[in-house]
Amino acid sequence: MEEKLKLASEAQPKPALAVAAQDRWASLLLLPCTLSVELAVSEVTVAELLGLKVGSIIDSRHAESSPLPVWVNGVAVGRADFDTVGKHIAVRITEIS
Image (cartoon, rainbow, N blue to C red; front, side, top):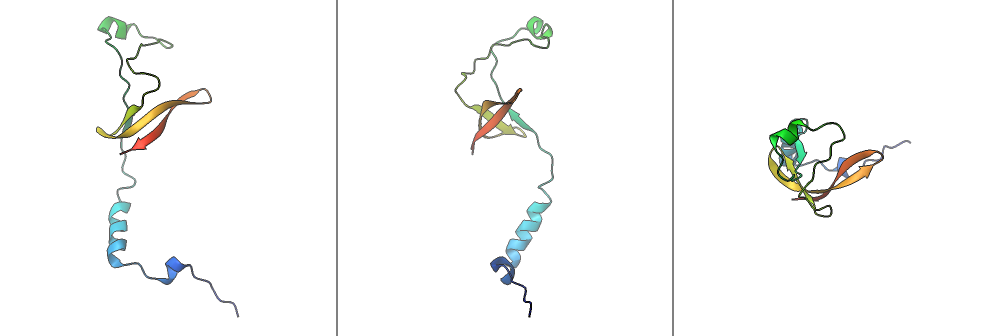
């Protein structure tokens, strides 16, 4: 007598409205978007910009301890801090609004 156990979520049917909402959003989950972090840089001249090379350092007006704005497709969605992962600089999301 082998009986299959059902999870509580399987035992109860989902309301049609909830299923329709999930289906509607499922097609959007794979859409590409652009995530960017804004770092304010003090005034740079065109000559300085053209003179940049690998390893150049640019002075920033941004305080090291203050959060950076995070944007998705041009819309502000939160804040982040710089972090390091191994030899790479990373961005750690600290707030989503």
